[in-house]
View (cartoon, rainbow, N blue to C red):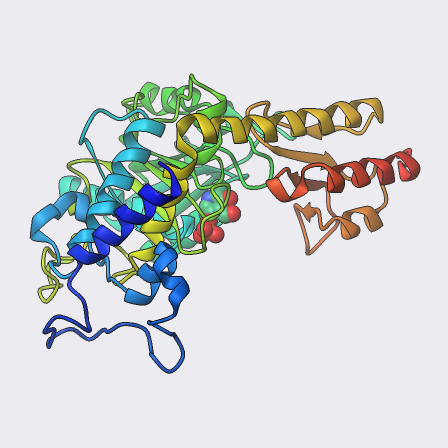
Length: 409
Ligand SMILES: Cc1ncc(COP(=O)(O)O)c(C=O)c1O
């Protein structure tokens, strides 16, 4: 869509919302943004659909793909845009069948991951009368720390599984042994995390290898894919993505538009097959029309609108082209590292390169703000994420510095 069409669509949605200043709204503990600080009548707002939505402050509490016209009725216009957004991501990017996915825009990847754990924990409790300590979350040690956080909050067992130092793949015999040990200690039900790019390495888990262990041992399991980093990259670079909804093993997916998609913070996304969201229903949320099914409760609808706008302006081909440009830049940097004989890990479908420490001085890591795998001790790895702002000059300068300062470990 062009900018004009996007603007028209967003303003139409705002018109369909009820408005705090033009409608009689007496019972809601919310309003438009403070008028001393935020100018509702600034001329530029006519051409600023995102800021206008932000200032109008529509509350998207709840899960609109699930409740549709039974949800909160004040902000149906922008909530409809969120429904379209979830369908777009689920069906066009993650290849789900039409209208088979529920979801919502979460504050970030952390919440979306914890939402998944919450749903599966409640499912096991309800369906199998499982106790919290009988439920385990299995994830590679390269996974995001939100899984430790979620396991802690939900009082379920975190089962981190080591990865091979070079390939970053989960060691299957070790996984099998850990599951066996956990099982002896009473863990009977499993939530399996498959990374669609880890934070530090850009590694992608082999979901078939993981699930085969659970099948072989007859352990009940559900799989959640964490695409917080890779969800807007990997599906565009690998048409055979085994972690999308074409794979019946995948029940839910986390995305994060405030990473690669360059949306404002507060734009995580949670996607799950229909029939699962009710496991997170809070029946006591009786004052919310359509109940609440999310961890966060109230949230500003402008976040959903921002993601929708970004995806519409690029379109599928435009976005694929942008990602392709980043991949070429990442390939170029890898070729230079090869020439300098600096070892690194890189998944060819992602724009993360993780360099082995010891081959260049730490002053270079500081200068370019590379990210260490260990800020408390000695770094073993340094990470580079090739992003639109690093293309060209920054990478060229980094390579030039490496050439003059490379160390022989
Ligand atoms: C793979 C992965 N999952 C989850 C998260 C958490 O996302 P957020 O910081 O948006 O909560 C991150 C953040 O870096 C991540 O890289």
